[in-house]
Amino acid sequence: MTSLYAELAAKVKLNPRLTGHNLARADLGMLLFNAGDALNELWLAAEAELADAAAADRLPPARLQAAVEKLRPLFGERR
Image (cartoon, rainbow, N blue to C red; front, side, top):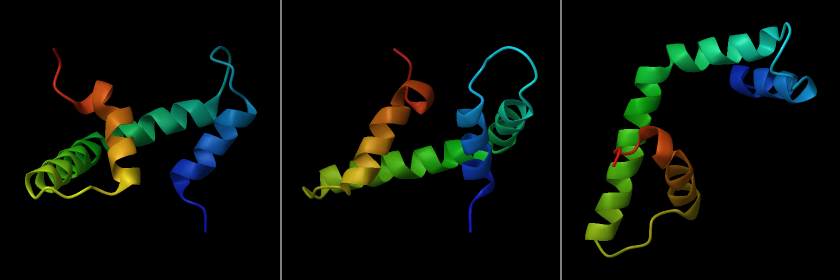
């Protein structure tokens, strides 16, 4: 089963234009905006997991580490 996010992202990839009518892009923006609080909470949990792993001197899951680093410019502390 495909998630709503995956479905909308696939539609945006088929029509990546920024101009004109692109309902999939608008729907994706609304979906992510409406999930903003949950996404921020997920970020905080993931960042805390990385901090816990570092404190316990263990390696965090590589996928989690990579995802956190990709999202750090959006959700991490601003300098």
